[in-house]
Structure formats: structure tokens, C-alpha cells
Image (tube, rainbow, N blue to C red; front, top):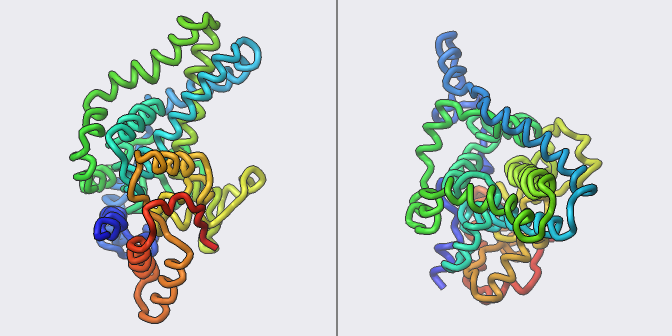
Length: 362
């Protein structure tokens, strides 16, 4: 059972988010400069310029995607709608179950077949290679809610959801990105294969397949192929994938952080689960969008585990949380450290098919 204990611990580069400091505090290399020259240097080192190709691409994608909604209801066949839905679902699973939960946080282990499938799915998201996605996300966790967070978690939802993704990284963020430990992915042949041939896979799977299939195999309209199967699908998958890094602004309740986009409460139900994810990112049940123990991605991972494709699913049980909190009170140690220890001990006693039980934290 030693394997469970070793695999339970998250990657060391993810940092301890319970101790995240604001960008103005003295925290290693983030010391607030005092002199005018230092201020200028600090600003220049952390300033992010707009990536104009990304800006123009995003503007055009929104226009074409919104027009795709009209085409969807006027010139699109049922089979193209189903085809688009399946590609969209596969792309989202590739990001959530693949890039996020498997490769970024190692919440479970996957067979070669499942890793290859998730690699294909992740390519269908059009989000860049798994390697680059994971590296940026790990930096996001390591610098959560600081000026060095590539997804602007010290600002508001709009910055995290849109602006951060259409700007270049600052020189400091580029250096931090290079320091992220990626040795686990570098030893994964499937990940490195995709990284090497990403743009070829992108053109074939992400661009040509959805456009060609409706025209070639069931004689649908050109408008349906371009504006629905490609543009609208891309717009949906892109924003859902970006939401993984910005969801805590919508679903997370943090009394010390005022939600600038409070009107979003009319669209979604808030919960504490995104905050839980930033404390203990290795739990496979922690959903990206404000849920826990439920949702399409969690169900997908459980099905894969039931068929033997996913193993060593890491989680936190109610009992482990209780013991961890008690341990923190009695010992005075940091809460996250105690929770990790209690969780690792609990994983050694859980049966191999614990994923069949819909364990929730109460």
C-alpha cells in the first residue's frame, strides 16, 4: 500500500496555496520595491503586452461563433448537431479529465490506451499541447492570487477568463514558467509525441475533421460545417477550458476577496469547492465548475476506473478531513499539511474500488 501514500502527495511545484501572499507583500522575489528605479524595473518586469494575433483571432472567433448559433437553428442537420455535440464533449473531457486532473494534478493514473484517448480528446479542444497547458496551469496554482499568476487571479473574472488568455506573459512569468517541474510529463511518451506533432494533429483532428465530415459524409451545408461544427464548437470549448482557471471567481466564496462580477450569481450556484481544489488539488472528485463528487468528468473517471483504465484514484474522505482538522488544532501545524497527512493515511485503508462509493464531504 506504499504506492497509495506516495501517489497521494501532489506535485511539489504546485505550492501551498493556504499561504498565498498578495503581490505587495514581502515573499521571496516578490518584495515590494521602494525606490523609483526599482518601481520602474518591477513594473517593466511584470508588465504584460497584448498578443494582437490572439486578440484579433478571439474577436473573429466570437463573431463567427455567435453567427453559428443562428446557423445551428436554420441551416444545420440533426446529425451535424449530434456530431458537434460529441466533438465538444470530447474536447472538454480532454481538458478536464486529461490535461487538468490527470496530467496537471495527478489525481489518478491511466493506462496507455486511456492516455492516448485523452490526448486525442485534448487535441480536439484546440488549447495548445498538453505540455504547455499543464505548465501554465501549474504556474497558476503556484502563484495563485499574486501578480505572477498568469490568469490574473488577483483581479476579476473578466481578466482571468479573457484578458489573461489574449496577452503575452511578462518577462518574470516567462522565467517562472521555465522553473516549473515538468519531469513527469517529459517522461510520458504520449504527451511528448503530441507536443512534437501538435500542429499537424491540430490541423487534422481539430480543423479538417469537423469541417470535412458534414460535407463529405452526410452532405450538410458549408455554413453548418464552418460556423457550427468548427466556429461555434471552438468558441464553446475554448471558454469552458478557460473557465477552469477563472471559475473560482464565480463559484468560490471567499470573505476576504470581493467578487467584482457579483451579477454572475444569477447564472450559477456558488459553492466552496473551487477553494477546496486550490488547497488540495490532488482529489479527483473536485470539479472544475463548483461541484464535488458529481459531474460528467468525475463520472467519466469512475467509468474508466471500473473498466480498469484508471487506477489509484486519489481523494479525501469525510473521516480524513475530520482527523486532519483535529490534528491541526492539537499540533498547531498548518491545516493543509495535516489534511494531506490524514488523507495519505486514509488512502492506505480504502479499498481499491472506493470510487464506486459517491463519497462527499459534509
